Amino acid sequence: MPKLASYNGFIDSIENIKISPMSRAFLFSDSVYEVISFYQNKFIDFERHLDRLKHSLDETKIACSIDECSAEIKKLLNESDLESGYIYFQVSRGIDSIRSHFFDESDCERFGFIEKFSFFNQSPLKVMLVDDIRWQRCDIKSTSLLGNVLQMNDAKSMDCNEIIMHKNGQLTEGGASNIFFVKNNKIFTPKLSPNILPGITRHQVIKIIKQKEFDFIEGTFDINDLKEASSIWFTSTTKGIIEVKEIVNLETKINPKCELLKVCKEAFVSKYFS
Ligand code: PDD
Image (cartoon, rainbow, N blue to C red; front, top):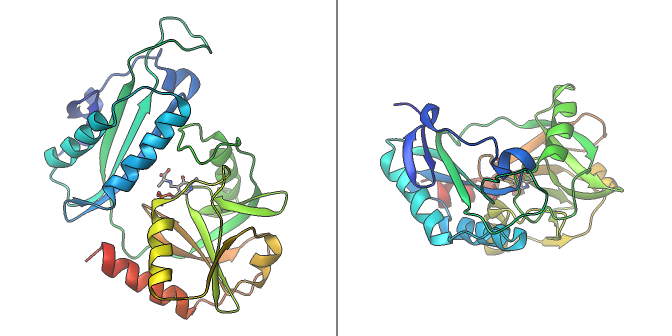
């Protein structure tokens, strides 16, 4: 079956979807998005993803009905024969008649596609520590990802598959994920701020950590904390929980047999993927 996509509610194979070059998504990256996973034909935390999409739309003043988005995302899953994967869904401010930074009232433009994906057996990641060069509203899930793209591709040239970003030494998040680390048998993660995306998986993992009553601190941490960490993890919709095996430009004390990681991973898989 060809890859299915949706454009303003019409479903077709992705090759048949035609998008205007005057789309503000194309000209200005004036758009927001979500990546929502599904397993055994059911979405994982659908409402929470929609709430975050609503937050992104509100903060960027893109007028779009969240109910319409919800119906279109559900329709994509219903019309597909995939059992496990994710839906990418983006909303742009719409199509301009002239290219202008100033926007008028326009009809929003919705585009999504469904992708097969297996969430299991992903390998530990080699990562690079980099400057966080992004804008100051990373709590908005905007498609303007040039900061992430540039830094991730620098890391790729060092054979890395992710990055850990910091602002003046203060840890923020991964290039496409949130970060957690373990030190002295306590779990830590940077607290939410405009510099961090409030990850849905981050939320799920924190719920598990609290249920298990592990020592846990959300706060402000820096590169020195990573040097002392016995385990570092990324969380995201497509990664689930994946551990770091090496930071190419930082010496660490990572122990691949971290018990807290093992317990959290098992609880995560059993809650969302069984
Ligand atoms: N990225 N931080 C950033 C910068 C991200 O891009 C993502 C997800 C996350 C984790 O959020 P969540 O747990 O809700 O997936 C954190 C998606 C998967 C992507 O852009 O492909």
